[in-house]
Length: 157
Image 1 (cartoon, rainbow, N blue to C red):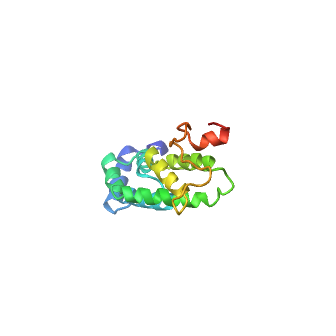
Image 2: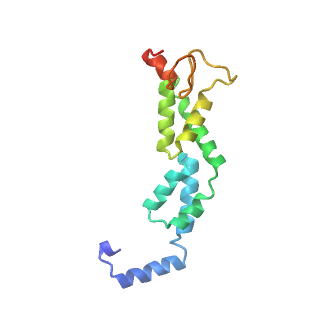
Image 3: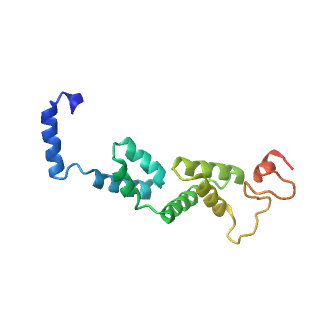
């Protein structure tokens, strides 16, 4: 209101009244924001914390709202995002799918370890058997480098 030329004392009276009648409620806003953005956009707690901080929500209020999201909730959201995105990636090589899916989860605020774990699990065939020529990135066998599938893509050993 200060940028609009409203006197400070008048702004204080208006804001106090808004708080009294419940029009300004950071707790309710933070709870609704976290619920909406986690379920609708699949954002992880880390990304949601940054969004709440950018909107001026107090750290304690944000922490309370984010406490509603547990590790299982984050894992379910990550799996759902990967499964949804995989439907549109059928023509891409597995190493490209892996790289893009991990990057997508990172942008959504998921930890690197969770992103890799979820993507590996979702790219693994349903029967658990290895796909022909598929080796999850980060694993090594028979003299291959630790990059696994990337060796196949670039003609490595």
